[in-house]
Length: 170
Image 1 (cartoon, rainbow, N blue to C red):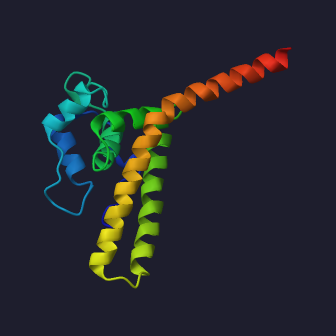
Image 2: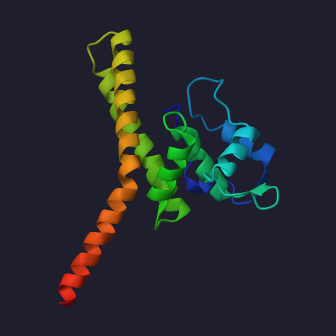
């Protein structure tokens, strides 16, 4: 419950300056530790890495806040490059609102499943923490493997559709 974040309409629909962005997102917990905060240097690095669109002038829109909310969570387990690639691949053909709400729902469902699993375990706290760490490691490896193969899969999917269209035209 402590990691919940706003629905899409909870983001300001006016453009904000950097300090306002940082202030707004600092109230959105990405971790249960207080030392995990977003900085202007991090935002600039995401822009340089093409993970986040450039600001319009010096102002950031709701779109920027959506991307930053997702980036802040994914950066815990993925590289900036992988985070950017995954966001672009997952967001295709969806509005910012659809993308964000899908992500937010995924976080809530996974958090509930994880919480239920941990609370119903007979293991000691250190064992639970170790199991979660190992699962996190394996999920990271699996995610990186899939990210590395998304472009190959997309090409194979396009080729299969093209072949099917050619076959039906014969």
